[in-house]
Image (cartoon, helix red, strand yellow):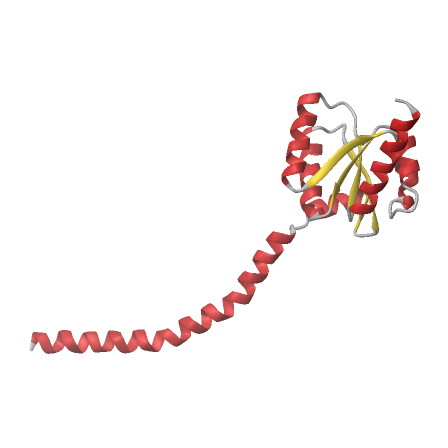
Length: 173
């Protein structure tokens, strides 16, 4: 790789670091090409990206970004997973991959400007994603309304039942 290619890669990485609100650093080792391709596909399904980076170039690209605090984690084989969207969904996909490949681990991450250690990123992967939380919220907001409608309908059902019994009684006599 010549100097111009390296410079363009640093600029591209810098844009990636600035554009994405959540970036996870992954210790990447011992994964074959087929598994990595499948992993990339899974990451793209959650509107995220993934890239294996050279540490020296990544360290140059970190300047003036929210990732400068993660300098010490760029040692050994490093990959980055990044997203503009839901960081929990991305963390869940990476965690699933790590479960299948124990030699791959979290290093650290930045989620919406806050630095996360490897253990905190693991906890993030255990959280409910944004759509799941919204679904629960809608259910909780809807439950009192359903109960109110049921309570309002029960006297009407009771009245209808009594009228039906009266009609049946008159038919018999």
